Image (cartoon, rainbow, N blue to C red; front, top):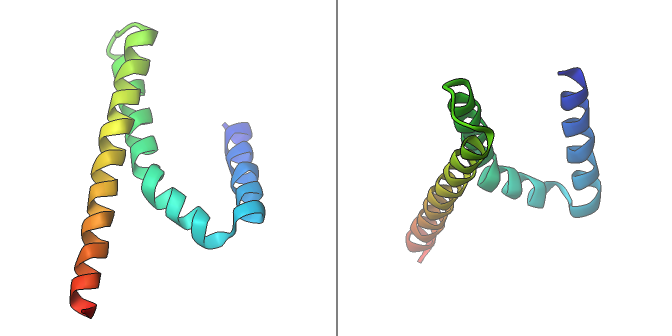
Amino acid sequence: MLEIIVTIALVLLLILLFIGLSVTALLLMLYGPGAATGFAAALSAHRLGVDPLGALAIGLLTFMAVTALTRMMIRAAIRGVRNLLT
């Protein structure tokens, strides 16, 4: 478990060094909720007895759905701010 945490921290540090803080924050805001729910859905499906490929498919579909919803909410928030400012 510690290796996973250290690996994630190092990858985030490398991303921060190469693309900057604001872009990293935007990527985490866009893909973070989808990745977390996709992982949880795949793990739950596997623990409930679904075969590994099925669990992977469930996780991927959940990731895609949550990321699409997050993208729509971010776009709606941007449109709302634009409407307030104009």
